[in-house]
Length: 179
Image (cartoon, rainbow, N blue to C red; front, side, top):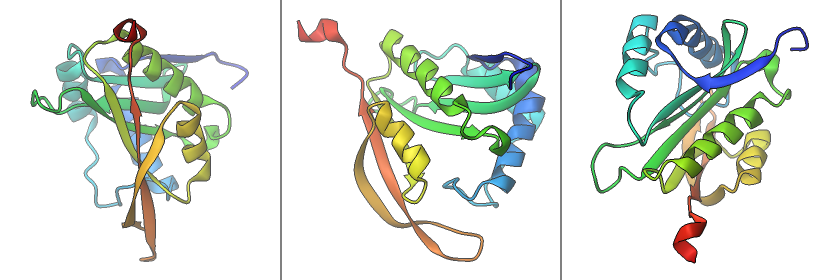
């Protein structure tokens, strides 16, 4: 990572092919994703359409971590467009395995939290994480996420071993509301 500067920015249509490659790679190299190999992975064209369709929503963002033109990490916040739950952002984060431990996830989280602090649309962030993924749990707790529950047998390894999944959340409270 020393040769190129790490850039965290909102995903653009031209990032779609590299993002599709990242998602496909992460699905194969990580046993920590909550979904399994049967989860649908979007094609580059589908991702491009997704990125364009979600760019202007106040309660959604797709951030990418890039070295040059290569996407090495992603942090996506999606929200139900139903007015009763549109204030809840569902967080997905993934980093390519060669870059684990280099702070990429932390930079993505910092940028995402800064975004939530500046958008009035999101008041709660939620995510799921395998209980055994101690590094990720620590990262989320560092950014104010609390474990709200445990989903017993919420995931399964490729070998069929059941895994517990934490349900974590962070409330977004703005200081001006408390004065």
